Image (cartoon, rainbow, N blue to C red; front, side):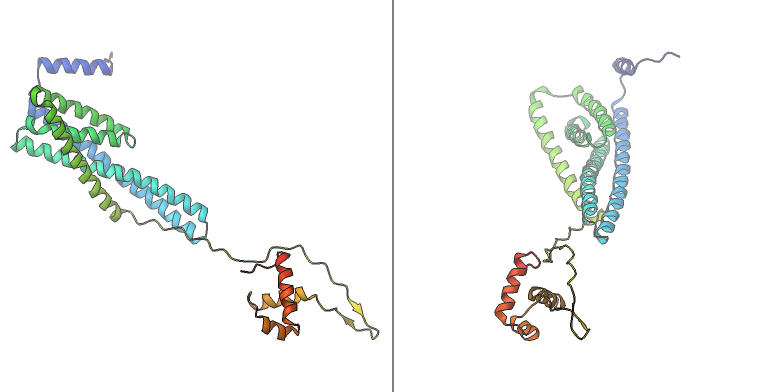
Length: 279
């Protein structure tokens, strides 16, 4: 069966509406239905983003517990990007909810033509915000915006058009700012706070050294093997290790039976050799 191209169908429908115009109330109902449908899509997207954020958050916590700071930072950054998208989606969802409620109210109690301009402004701005997140919803909002604009043009008053545009723009901006503020508050309730990275602490440790050569053993005339005494630097280093990295000149001098000045010289030599770090 032959099917008309989409663009042709749209043109045909426009011509048909001019010949047989659809009643205003029916067109408003169509706009309400399409807006409610897009709001449901945004709700579904918000739920998916929240679930995705939960997965990344758990991975971030797991990486931190495993002391894997690189992956912890990776997952934390992904959570931040997800939350940017979630904020746009949620604020757009709240804005559309306001639009639906406003249309329902003016359809039943007010003058649609006199109050539709702010609604159009909110739909247009919301479309621009969501275009980079959910293009499908943005396209549909563009069509709804065209529908509402066509209705407005039917009874538009040209002398006051500039003032009406400014007023509608201000009201739309106010609605979007309020929706964004509410979204920010709900984000705090829905998404847990990201853990801050643990600061790295600099620890002074001896530099790795090549294995020390074995010390030759001298044999006395009595046949008893005796190991010659270690150099003072090595004895001082062993003393530092056995005292948890701390050294008191007086105590070390007494324990090693060496003058304090000799120990001070040994410390300087160990430092110059890179075996210890001193503040």
